[in-house]
Image 1 (tube, rainbow, N blue to C red):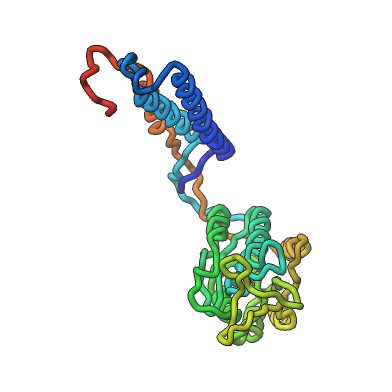
Image 2: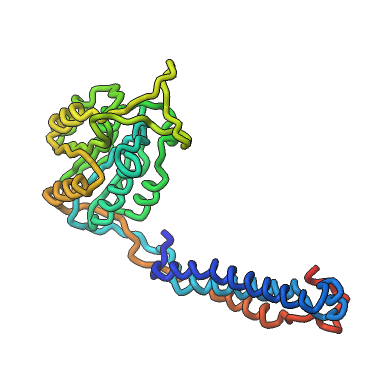
Length: 339
């Protein structure tokens, strides 16, 4: 596993565009100053030793050295020893609806993005828990197997869009059944399913699936996304909205009754998401009530430092930059090394 020991230093990469802008500004100022004395083409004949390309090379070598130095001080590391540790935690499977109706904007910025923001903050609060991610529309797929690697969880979460599931619909039952099978076998910790959906286009026996999950001690908590009065589904911007076969604009509404029935069958909680953090707080409170027990987690306990190779690259860049003169050497003027 690769990581940075001090990832906060990576914010220093923000200075790189500033360096480029300053160099371009200085270069433009220099060209304007030369034009005051005459045509640049004529002046070039009077300054045969001046090499603009060499000046560019020196800048980019120095620029590359600075960029690599930032990665060096961030501390690149590779995990070298994987071991199993026991921690007190719970297991959580998230089922996220990615059907087209989740693009509706009756919550800000839209239902799907609001759900992703909420899950990202929720994941930040995990310490020793395990989390997995299932996406579903007309079918359900495991996006991330249950894990304690929260960085990977947030990375997969950020890449989710309706396009990752080709079959449209809302197969809630299939998502619940897949989540039940995704928990760690023989793990004694409490298990829960967090299902985030607008409840539309219900296609299978979601209530039956929730009941079976509850019988196995797995509670099904539902977060309803959207408003009851409905809203159109934007596509492609410019006030274009999804239409049915007859050309009518499709209006999507939160099927709150269905969501409540699934939560009741799964002996879980139902909460509607809005533009506040009320749904997030309700989920956090529900997870905090769960009984934490020992769960096995595989972690890297030793990391090998990988900065040495980068340090040699920095040294190489600096040596080449130092040896590269601003002007052409009279001895090697005929050698077009930078042409």
